[in-house]
Every structure is written in C-alpha cells, then in structure tokens.
Length: 307
Length: 317
Figure (cartoon, rainbow over the protein chains, first blue to last red):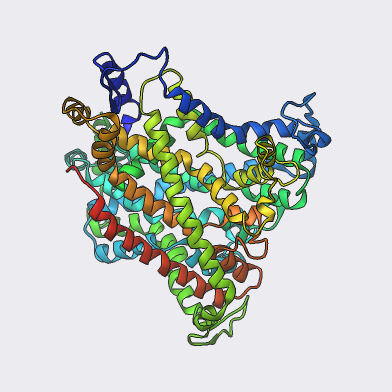
C-alpha cells in the first residue's frame, strides 16, 4: 500500500533499458515527449473542469451566469456572491458542525474500535465468538435497512435519556457512528499480525492490560489507526442521508445538508449557489491535499485487502 | 523504550498493594473482566444502532406502521404484497438496475484506462494523478450541484459544447429519457478517483519481471496488457465490481439533489423511493419492506458476482 509511487520510480530506472513502467516497448520512434500526455492532458481537463467551473461561476455577476453562450472568463471578480451566500446561510456554522462531527466520530472510533478490536484479538472471554459474529453480521447490512429504527431510537434517546444525542442535535450524528463493525474488524485483523512478545514482556514488568495496549500495541498500530481515521473522516464528512433524516434545524446542519438546503432555497441563483459550493468544497480539498498520502493509502489498502 | 516506562509506572502500585487488593486486582486484570470491559462500549453502540434496528425493521416490514404509532398492527405479508403490485417499485427496480449496469462498467473502464495511463514516470504525472484523486474529496452533494449547473438546459456548458459541435440542444435532467444518464455521468466522474487509486495500487503490485519476460518472448504492448496485466488485475476488478455495485444499488444523494426522483419518476431509484415512503409519507412498515427487498437484491447480486467472478479471477498466491 505504500507502493503507490515506488514502482513507478523503478519503472523510470528501467526506461533506459527500453522498458517503460507497465508497458514493455520494443524499438520505436522516439517522441520528444511521452505520447501518454496526449491522453492525460484532455483527461485532466475533463476531471478538473467541474472544479474550475464552480470557481468561475462563483465570481460572476448573475447576468453573466445566466447568459448563453456561457461566459467562460468573467469581466470582473464579483466576491459579493460570497458575502451574499454567507448572509443567507451560515456556511461557517455548517463547516464547524461538519468538523466537530467528523473529528468526534474519528476519535470515538479510534478509541472504541481499538479497545474492542484488541480484546477480540487477544483475550479469551465468555461469549467472545458469539459477540464477534453478531457484530460482523451488521457489516453486510445496508444503512437503508437500519435507518428507520435508528431514527426512532435516536428520537427516543433524545426525549428520554439525553437531549444532546437526540434528533436535531449534533450528538445524533456522532453517536450511531461512534463505533463501527468495520473498524473493530479492521483493527482486530491488524492486532493479530503483531507479535505478542512485546505485550507479554510488558505484562511481566507489571503493566496492566490497558497500559500494554496504550503504550505498546497502539504505537505499533499507527498505520492501521491512520487508515481507519482517514476512512472514518471521509465517511463522516460526506454523509448525507442520515443528517438529512436526523437534523432539520439550520444551526445543526453539516456542510452537505446545509448546502442541499441552500440549493433548495436558491435553486436558480447559480452565482450564490456556486459561492456556497466553493465554501463547502475548499476545506475538504485542503485537508485532502495536506493528508493526501494517508487518504490514498487508505483507499488503496481497502482495495488491496479486498483482493 | 516504552516497556521501561511501563515498569516504572507499575512499580509503586505493586508496593502499596494491600493483601485483599491482590485478589481484586487479579480479577480486574483477568481476561474475562478486561475482555468484556474493553468490548462493551463499542459493541453496545453497534448493537443499539445496528443489530436492534436490523431486527426491528424486519418486524416493521410485517406491520402497518406509521410515524409514532405504538399500536402498530401486525399486517402479515401485506407490505410485501403491496410492493409486488406497486408500479413505482417496478420502475424503481428497473431504474436502479439500468443505473448500476451503466455506472459500474463505466467507472471501471474510466478508472482502468486512467490508471494504466498514469502508471508511468513521466513529467507532470503527480499533477495528473492529483486531478483524479481530487474527485474523491468532493461530496456527493457538491458534485450533484456542479453537474446540475453544467447540464442546465438553458445556460449549461454541456449544451454550449453541443452547440459548438452543431448538435441539437438537450433537456438533460429535465428530460425523462435523459436524466438517468446525466446521473450516471456525474457519479462516474465522482468515483473516478477511487477507481484510479485501486487500479493504480494493483498495477504497481505487478512484478516487472513478468512484463519483461513477455516482452522478451516477443509480445507487443497490447498483447502484454491483454494476457499479463489484465489477468493480474482481476482481483482488483472483482473488488471494484462488488464495491461499486453495492454503492450503485444504494444511489440516493445525487437523485435527491438533482431530480428528486423526477421527471415523471424517471430517476426514482429504490433508495429514493424508500426514503420518500419512510420520511415523506411516513409509511415505516412499507419502507422497511422495501429496505429488506433492497438488502436481498444486494446479497443476491453480490453472491453471483463472487461466484462468477472467482472463475475469472487469478490470484498469484
């Protein structure tokens, strides 16, 4: 999984010997540049154009946006769209809500899945196998099957137990996802690949089982924890269906839900919509590029694990 | 290094131990007690929001249940019978299957093509790759809004491109015959990054020696790709087929945002209809029956894919 760029480098070394990465090439006409650019440049334009078009529309005047043929280069940058969008929907609040929900979900998952995954990997206790089977059974069930009872349960919890985890509260977006069967399974599998000797020697030295987990095992499991964190973050950040069901008041909305609601209210104000869209996109793009390596490795890891 | 600090932390506690406390500590430190206490918080959440709802919605699917009706009545198979007669369900199944049949091969073809093109050390390669990865960072809602704008019938860039090619203007998302295809296009774009990452990782796991050997044996680039690369990619292809299909059958976000199932139910897919029944009409019982039907469809298709896929999948180990 760390191999995402390494073999390409090996390929470059081979290029001198007439074999390019991936494709063996016999003697051939020498191009001044790789012909693959002719494929990749148009592909990149197609892939990036939607992003560029959001950005362009977001600084156009409404009359430029509602013009055919489309105005590809605006005459002036109209940043008022952004202040107008901010005035009609609290995008900063959406952003904060999304960040709070995603970070809390990641944190809860790391703690709870590490504890449970470790216990399933290392301890023998009554009912372990049965409990693990019950957890794994939920892994295959699509969210649509559980969402209606989940809604009813969340509503009940909010009324009878704690308002903060009820409908229309951010807790309702965190608690149901605070631990996942995938996370427990994933970390259990990883813990089982670690040599048990380190933990045993820590135990001989008098460490409790919790200390052994926190001080010995978790530092060794950093790559797996990073993968789980990246995947959980992406899932939480992009989640739409559950927030749509569980939240109706504007001040508790996450970015996707806030943006969708904003679109419902301003369906044809394209400049405003695109300004709002830019504000929703940029934070995640920034996080993604800063931590690109982790996100890419995590996705590649699930792909390779599945194969 | 860590073990040293552990010993130091454990030391003082051992010395101050009172006689009876030893037993308490041994019990607390037993695999039974620690096992259960480590497992309980995570398992409780999964049971409460996973296991219990799975059983509950199965029960709901046999009830005539609407919002906050504690007196839900047992209704036997009537929800399932209603489903069999409901023309919208038949349409939704058809739309879901058509969408899946286009989206899954489409995404895989785009992903494979780009991954092969990007699996080489040429100038700007990291820029090209980043452009593909960027589609992973966009939420389905942002993606749907952009594409609704791109495919706007009056002012959209798509119709502008058609006019440049002297082709007739289209209604796209406003047209019952085209809307589903626009949704296919936008979701393929949105999943490109994912497919590229999976294929690129698999491509880079192919040992160079195999490709070199084929070249020495006189195989051209196409034959090498067809006979060596593609079979070695088959595990990744099987994974993508299954993964993308599961996601395609659960399509919702893009439909909700761009068409709300319309025009004329043309983009009503199963999950959209399920959502509509559950949270617009509050027919919890009927919606649960649809959910279980969806679950069944997913299981059947996944099992078939694994059974058939295994025959075409080549594992090196």
